[in-house]
Length: 158
Image 1 (cartoon, one colour):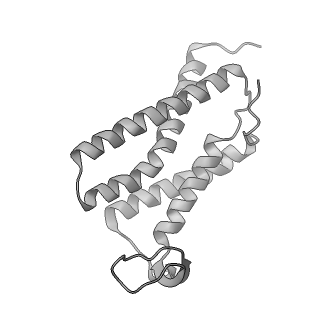
Image 2: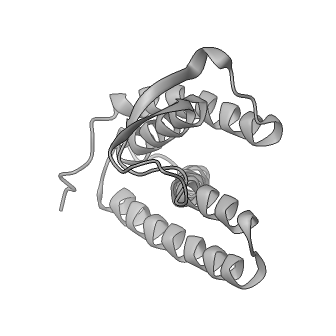
Image 3: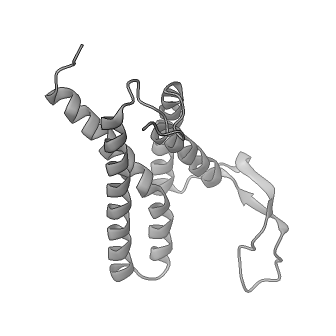
């Protein structure tokens, strides 16, 4: 049974073009906290950034958009890579896709549980931030690894 929610295969290439640079830039931002001043902007926010201040819900605030842009590009690239068909999408690949997704969710929540037990304070907020992206990373890594492994072990049938 074909999965109707998958995008055409051409979007996978676009996804990789977006995902790889955003991953590299995101990793660079983690290491350096780089925030270019030309990305400072006044944006509309539905939630204040400080609970104790006089800031209100649904108000304007000044922020640096670096993390927003990199995170958004990472999510868009991951969605395109994850939800694009393979060139030869069949039931075997659909099964690999399904098992990889289940495996990614399971590993992600095991890591989250370990984080709940071992990480505290503001460091936990960083763990939660990175946790948003790990399901995609685990899924893409496992799905492509299994496809690669199977392509090497099974000769092409023509």
